Length: 391
Image (tube, rainbow, N blue to C red; front, side, top):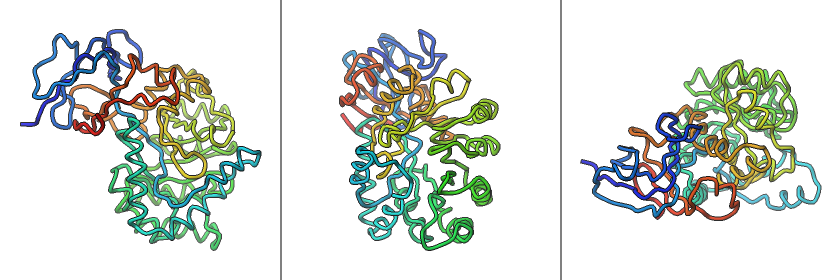
């Protein structure tokens, strides 16, 4: 039999299970609560006074417990540093996507061991801040060999790997020839290591027709579609994602009325990445308007060396509350349960019997402190698949 662990003395438990919560609302909050973990799953949730016995007992001491963060958008497989580019932006230079090619050159020159070590450090950094599920994209290889090896590296750390060969067009080829490469030999090499396929559908990257062709080729190879869209300007990427029924479309910074209507009617999740706007000084997405219109919103880090080098989901929550007018509850829900939905997952992001035992103990009495105390390290404990990975 699996070892059982009971975490008791939880002052405020966020379950994201609306039927379980005592107060209604998105978060399914249970007060004076306990959680029992058995193996990699949650076995029991409820009032601490009713908690069953377990092999191991942990006293939360009145602190809050939340589901582990689900970071559904990151670019961790890279080499090199672009802090000079960030400094230039902070002194007035506008952001463009051209710096991606700088990272491509350095990533191609790195060894597999160097890339693996670097990703491992970033994943450990994320875990220490409460992220228990994450997606990792390729996209800094842009050759058959380097895209495949980037995904092989990423697969050592997560099953949620995304082939982003269509990040930008390399300087030594034409858009037409590169799309042929992405949809042909590169896709064949990458598909065994990936669950998803993604395209940067944007001015200066790939247009709607090219994105449609790349996503169709990915679907033929068994990969589910994702899309970067409407990050730098208005365009057709969000509407394409909705037309294709993609589970999520990411960035969504510049949206027209037709884009919002398409998101509402399709049910496609808008994954917002407020760390990007913080790091590029672009306008923040209108999260409040999207929520009020009925759009589901996920939050993710977009951790990458160029436009947003943060691994902190707590920072993303604080930015979403302060800059995008989300409530603390909406932001936490977006960073957990809706982030899971953006990955097509129903086993994570919720603390309920049968779900993954991925949870975070906060050194705070309430989840609200994630936004109330920005920049403060509040994670006191992390359990991933039922195992304590930070105590």
